[in-house]
Image (tube, rainbow, N blue to C red):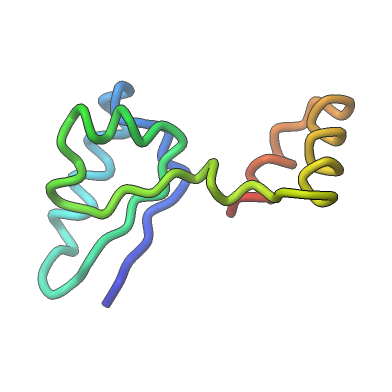
Length: 88
């Protein structure tokens, strides 16, 4: 089974790293993991790519007209929920 872990802020926050590692270790038997990270470069630096496929959650942001609408909402509404609703 492929299990996706999301809302990962990056491994420089070692609490986030520990949560990702312990979750993967406790569920690893027969499973594959994808870690959707806001800072994939940190996860590569700390070796999480050895236990999970790392993908950038920023790649999930819309493009084109939808992307423009998203950026305008973020700029003027200052509500980070817009970001999380968009990527997750």
